[in-house]
Length: 426
Image (cartoon, rainbow, N blue to C red; front, side, top):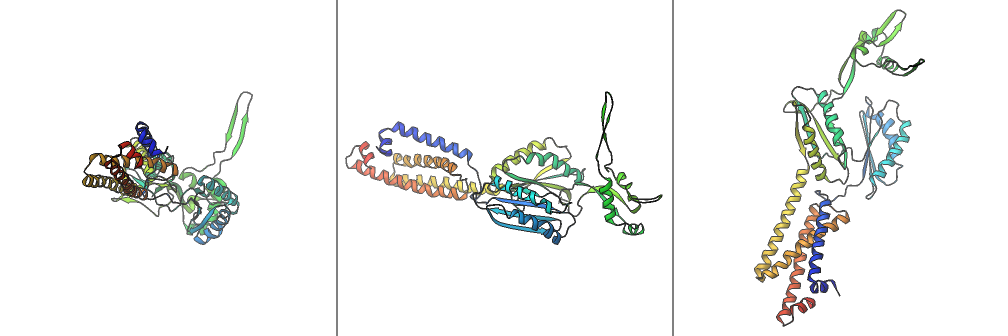
């Protein structure tokens, strides 16, 4: 007994099977990701390294080349590209489709850690991230205030937003554009340095020698034991100004004799403004193949929660949201499906002029489309422009088959066959 014969002779079973298909389809639909186009992004790992003050040539020879040679030994790499510019090295490793991103990231970290001994001692540790370092962010918010400076805003954005937004699933990184971090800035007078026969290298060596905090043992008593700390860290501008650079007999040269120290931003070369007011921009970058809509929705939800705990003078607004364009594209295709569905019903009823005949594709199309969502979920597909357009075409195929079958059955009924037998033979 074939499936269609069983369905005709057991209509209750056919109804139950249709309801089951719809339920499984709705279940699969709840887990489907939403994107503008199919997820074809290859696994991408980036290695970013900072070396402040170094030229592009130094970055290439001392950082990029050793790291590139180490990363090149990882299995599954399709292409390897690197960029060296002043103060920063970036290496992009693109892997073959189907490569496990977590395993690839762990392999890259292992190879990078082994290459650390070949890098300059004062270079910042390389950062390995599971995304293209130049990948376009999908959403961002602006944080600004009329009464706070960029240092305070940057610190607030780091503590309030970055730490909470990094836990969003499938987010590669949360960055702060226009960030200003605290740093002790030393301003040196070259004429005074020359007069005291000093150089910036001497100042750096003095800081490295004096600005340390080492364990100093403990004091043991009969009933009391106290740890001893050497309070030698330089914390305030006054501590840095009193730093001894040179000592010759009774003559002591301090930092304040050749310059001064002040607390300020690490980088003053860039600033981000909106309507003339300085601000910082918090952006999220997705991992390759991530569900942009889900990330944007969760990002918006968490921002609304965080915003309630911020001071009243801090203003948070939306900078951009790339998911809006994806939503519009998907909504347009969904509307096309509904229009196609309505036109099919209208055409069938106009030509056949039988509501019972029109009812058949009216039931067949939703069951077929909704059931396909579960198959799409099992296959790892997403709801995107291409899959929705395929559904538009599928409506025509389903309706064509339904009309042909109905026509054959009706012709047999008109020939005098019993409706049940005509349905089986048709």
